[in-house]
Length: 43
Image (tube, rainbow, N blue to C red; front, top):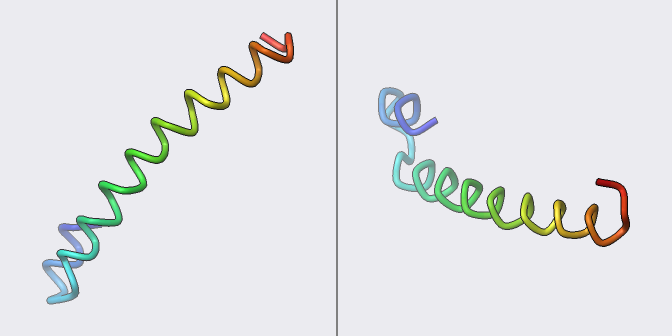
C-alpha cells in the first residue's frame, strides 16, 4: 500500500497511482459485470 511504500522509502507515488487506477477500474468493471448479468437474465 501507499503507507508501506512510503515507510520503506519505496516509490510511494507509483503505489498511490496504482491504488487510484485499480479503484476506478473496479467501479467500472463491477458496473459492466452487473449489466451483463442482468442482460443475460442471471440476476
